[in-house]
Length: 181
Image (cartoon, rainbow, N blue to C red; front, side, top):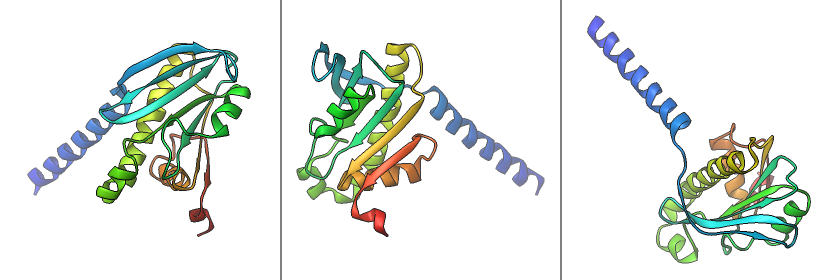
Protein backbone atom coordinates (compact mmCIF):
# COMPACT_ATOMS: atom_id res chain seq x y z
CA UNK A 1 0.00 0.00 0.00
CA UNK A 2 2.79 2.36 0.89
CA UNK A 3 4.56 1.74 -2.46
CA UNK A 4 1.37 2.60 -4.36
CA UNK A 5 1.03 5.85 -2.44
CA UNK A 6 4.65 6.82 -3.12
CA UNK A 7 4.26 5.94 -6.80
CA UNK A 8 1.14 8.09 -7.07
CA UNK A 9 2.91 11.00 -5.41
CA UNK A 10 5.91 10.63 -7.71
CA UNK A 11 3.71 10.49 -10.82
CA UNK A 12 1.68 13.49 -9.61
CA UNK A 13 4.79 15.55 -8.93
CA UNK A 14 6.28 14.54 -12.28
CA UNK A 15 3.16 15.69 -14.13
CA UNK A 16 3.11 19.01 -12.26
CA UNK A 17 6.81 19.55 -13.01
CA UNK A 18 6.27 18.84 -16.72
CA UNK A 19 3.35 21.27 -16.85
CA UNK A 20 5.39 23.94 -15.09
CA UNK A 21 8.35 23.49 -17.47
CA UNK A 22 6.07 23.66 -20.51
CA UNK A 23 4.24 26.77 -19.28
CA UNK A 24 7.30 28.67 -18.05
CA UNK A 25 10.18 27.66 -20.26
CA UNK A 26 8.77 27.13 -23.73
CA UNK A 27 9.27 30.05 -26.09
CA UNK A 28 7.05 30.14 -29.16
CA UNK A 29 9.10 30.08 -32.35
CA UNK A 30 8.12 31.67 -35.65
CA UNK A 31 9.42 31.83 -39.20
CA UNK A 32 9.35 35.47 -40.30
CA UNK A 33 8.86 36.36 -43.98
CA UNK A 34 8.26 40.11 -43.54
CA UNK A 35 9.62 42.53 -40.93
CA UNK A 36 9.38 46.16 -42.01
CA UNK A 37 8.44 49.62 -40.83
CA UNK A 38 5.25 51.07 -42.37
CA UNK A 39 3.94 54.63 -42.23
CA UNK A 40 0.19 53.98 -42.53
CA UNK A 41 -2.29 54.06 -40.90
CA UNK A 42 0.20 55.22 -38.24
CA UNK A 43 3.94 54.51 -38.08
CA UNK A 44 4.43 50.90 -36.97
CA UNK A 45 6.60 47.83 -37.30
CA UNK A 46 4.85 45.13 -39.35
CA UNK A 47 5.81 41.47 -38.90
CA UNK A 48 4.32 38.57 -40.89
CA UNK A 49 5.22 34.91 -40.70
CA UNK A 50 4.24 31.42 -39.63
CA UNK A 51 3.98 29.96 -36.13
CA UNK A 52 4.49 26.23 -35.77
CA UNK A 53 4.22 24.74 -39.24
CA UNK A 54 1.00 26.21 -40.58
CA UNK A 55 -0.45 29.21 -38.69
CA UNK A 56 0.17 32.42 -40.64
CA UNK A 57 0.13 35.58 -38.53
CA UNK A 58 0.68 39.31 -38.57
CA UNK A 59 1.83 41.66 -35.82
CA UNK A 60 1.63 45.44 -35.92
CA UNK A 61 3.67 47.33 -33.31
CA UNK A 62 2.90 51.05 -33.28
CA UNK A 63 5.70 53.54 -32.65
CA UNK A 64 3.43 55.28 -30.13
CA UNK A 65 2.46 52.17 -28.12
CA UNK A 66 -0.08 52.53 -25.29
CA UNK A 67 1.23 49.42 -23.51
CA UNK A 68 -1.66 47.16 -24.54
CA UNK A 69 -2.07 44.26 -26.97
CA UNK A 70 -5.14 43.32 -29.03
CA UNK A 71 -5.52 39.79 -30.38
CA UNK A 72 -8.00 39.42 -33.26
CA UNK A 73 -9.71 36.16 -34.21
CA UNK A 74 -11.21 36.04 -37.68
CA UNK A 75 -14.52 34.68 -38.86
CA UNK A 76 -14.99 31.52 -40.89
CA UNK A 77 -14.06 33.13 -44.21
CA UNK A 78 -11.15 35.36 -43.19
CA UNK A 79 -7.39 35.06 -42.97
CA UNK A 80 -4.72 36.74 -40.88
CA UNK A 81 -4.88 39.60 -43.39
CA UNK A 82 -8.63 40.31 -43.12
CA UNK A 83 -9.23 42.01 -39.75
CA UNK A 84 -11.35 44.76 -41.29
CA UNK A 85 -11.16 48.11 -39.49
CA UNK A 86 -10.10 46.49 -36.20
CA UNK A 87 -6.39 46.67 -37.03
CA UNK A 88 -6.53 50.29 -38.21
CA UNK A 89 -8.54 51.40 -35.19
CA UNK A 90 -6.28 49.51 -32.75
CA UNK A 91 -3.12 51.03 -34.25
CA UNK A 92 -4.58 54.54 -34.31
CA UNK A 93 -5.31 54.20 -30.58
CA UNK A 94 -1.79 52.92 -29.83
CA UNK A 95 -2.55 49.20 -29.36
CA UNK A 96 -0.20 46.52 -30.63
CA UNK A 97 -2.23 44.20 -32.88
CA UNK A 98 -1.96 40.49 -33.70
CA UNK A 99 -4.04 38.21 -35.93
CA UNK A 100 -3.65 34.67 -37.29
CA UNK A 101 -5.29 32.37 -39.83
CA UNK A 102 -5.06 29.77 -37.03
CA UNK A 103 -3.63 27.18 -39.41
CA UNK A 104 -6.81 26.49 -41.35
CA UNK A 105 -9.05 27.82 -44.09
CA UNK A 106 -12.44 26.91 -45.60
CA UNK A 107 -10.97 23.87 -47.38
CA UNK A 108 -9.21 22.41 -44.35
CA UNK A 109 -12.17 22.94 -42.02
CA UNK A 110 -14.46 21.19 -44.50
CA UNK A 111 -12.12 18.16 -44.57
CA UNK A 112 -11.22 18.07 -40.85
CA UNK A 113 -13.91 19.88 -38.81
CA UNK A 114 -13.23 17.93 -35.62
CA UNK A 115 -9.74 19.37 -35.26
CA UNK A 116 -10.37 22.99 -36.19
CA UNK A 117 -11.83 24.42 -32.97
CA UNK A 118 -9.28 22.79 -30.69
CA UNK A 119 -6.52 23.77 -33.11
CA UNK A 120 -7.80 27.36 -33.29
CA UNK A 121 -7.61 27.71 -29.50
CA UNK A 122 -4.08 26.32 -29.54
CA UNK A 123 -3.00 28.58 -32.40
CA UNK A 124 -4.49 31.72 -30.81
CA UNK A 125 -2.78 30.80 -27.54
CA UNK A 126 0.52 30.42 -29.43
CA UNK A 127 -0.06 33.73 -31.24
CA UNK A 128 -0.78 35.49 -27.94
CA UNK A 129 2.33 34.08 -26.25
CA UNK A 130 4.46 34.89 -29.30
CA UNK A 131 3.09 38.46 -29.54
CA UNK A 132 3.78 38.98 -25.82
CA UNK A 133 7.37 37.75 -26.35
CA UNK A 134 7.88 40.13 -29.29
CA UNK A 135 6.41 43.08 -27.36
CA UNK A 136 8.76 42.46 -24.45
CA UNK A 137 11.74 42.34 -26.80
CA UNK A 138 10.66 45.27 -29.00
CA UNK A 139 9.40 47.70 -26.33
CA UNK A 140 11.53 46.39 -23.43
CA UNK A 141 8.43 45.83 -21.27
CA UNK A 142 5.42 43.55 -21.08
CA UNK A 143 1.94 44.51 -22.22
CA UNK A 144 -0.12 45.86 -19.33
CA UNK A 145 -3.29 44.32 -20.81
CA UNK A 146 -4.02 41.69 -23.42
CA UNK A 147 -7.44 42.02 -25.02
CA UNK A 148 -9.09 39.72 -27.53
CA UNK A 149 -11.87 40.38 -30.00
CA UNK A 150 -13.52 38.21 -32.59
CA UNK A 151 -16.60 38.30 -34.74
CA UNK A 152 -18.70 35.43 -36.03
CA UNK A 153 -16.55 32.28 -35.79
CA UNK A 154 -13.84 34.45 -34.21
CA UNK A 155 -16.31 35.27 -31.46
CA UNK A 156 -16.62 31.57 -30.70
CA UNK A 157 -12.84 31.36 -30.56
CA UNK A 158 -12.62 34.32 -28.17
CA UNK A 159 -15.22 32.75 -25.86
CA UNK A 160 -13.61 29.30 -25.91
CA UNK A 161 -10.11 30.67 -25.48
CA UNK A 162 -10.97 32.61 -22.35
CA UNK A 163 -12.74 29.52 -21.00
CA UNK A 164 -9.70 27.33 -21.74
CA UNK A 165 -7.00 29.84 -20.69
CA UNK A 166 -8.61 32.38 -18.33
CA UNK A 167 -5.27 33.89 -17.25
CA UNK A 168 -4.08 34.58 -20.81
CA UNK A 169 -6.40 37.52 -21.56
CA UNK A 170 -7.37 40.57 -19.53
CA UNK A 171 -10.71 40.85 -21.37
CA UNK A 172 -12.47 39.44 -24.44
CA UNK A 173 -15.18 40.73 -26.75
CA UNK A 174 -16.84 37.73 -28.44
CA UNK A 175 -19.26 39.10 -31.03
CA UNK A 176 -21.28 36.03 -32.02
CA UNK A 177 -24.64 34.36 -31.50
CA UNK A 178 -23.04 32.04 -28.91
CA UNK A 179 -22.97 34.95 -26.44
CA UNK A 180 -26.78 34.87 -26.21
CA UNK A 181 -26.88 31.33 -24.78
